[in-house]
Image (cartoon, rainbow, N blue to C red):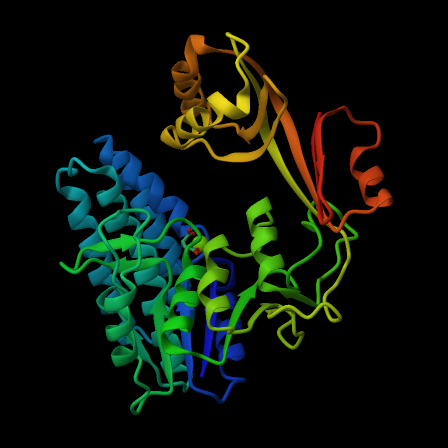
Length: 418
Ligand code: ASP
Ligand code: MG
């Protein structure tokens, strides 16, 4: 049994959907397809949610744009106008519009999930019908009925016990060879829609892989696999043939945007191999993530860049020691204001931390840090991480730049630079 996850970029046009069908039809095994919303639909629905919640009527035009984007694709794919897809699509847009006509609730995150989830409902409905029309019978599953979460909207926590009961019942492969379902979505026990966090479809595919004990998970992307740098940044970026689960978690943690960071945990627990591969060059094998095998793993330096960072240096005004008296208080303030810490370093009486430049959160954090500490602030800096660093790699990243802070361990070197 295979699980295939296709992201929004793979089905962002009629041509993309046809390419997707070609790939699926190459496989003769039982398959579950986990799909994201088409193209940039989630972003568009996010904007609609913001307008709706702020009671601005601007969402009307944005709603029409989302609608015509999907209809353009469907009109191209289904020239015969009495296909069932047209009625299904009309129904989904009708439901969405009816939601937007109501008053917003008092909970933004709740409304967000109810609205944004339409992206995946639309994409899976279209793709399932088009697969069928192309000679591949399949069953469309509403994932919200079996992947159960709590009611933390926009970041649903999976109810593993309940999902472990429901998911295998739902994907039973009795008389069905191919299933199509939504990534990113979950459902509460009272059948309200939740989402798992942005870019969460990879995570959905990993959850299903775990619950169904599959042989292999494949994530199809618009890049050849996991590269040793973002190819848009370094044009000599190379593909990594094979990496361990641990290396994949480290890369995701340092900010490599290859797979959602939560994806690896469930598949590592059951040792399910993950193949990250290209939907463009679909005969290429991509990158294999599996149990460690030092011999087979690449030791190429891997470069990860985070820009728009802020380096904050904090010193207690009473000159007390950072480690003994202040660190836990500081960390709980960072957590309270949800400021994500990317790198820390301390001396006896000072603490430096590199964080994402999220102005609102930072301001409220600095307000709380207040008079107890003297704070220095450097914005517009970059955080460069090199895994498997060597002198040449370090020279390449730092030559001619000002290094504000550096840290090296055996496997990882990090530089905050301007
Ligand atoms: N469509 C969702 C998003 O764009 C989930 C995903 O693509 O993984 O965040
Ligand atoms: Mg997406």
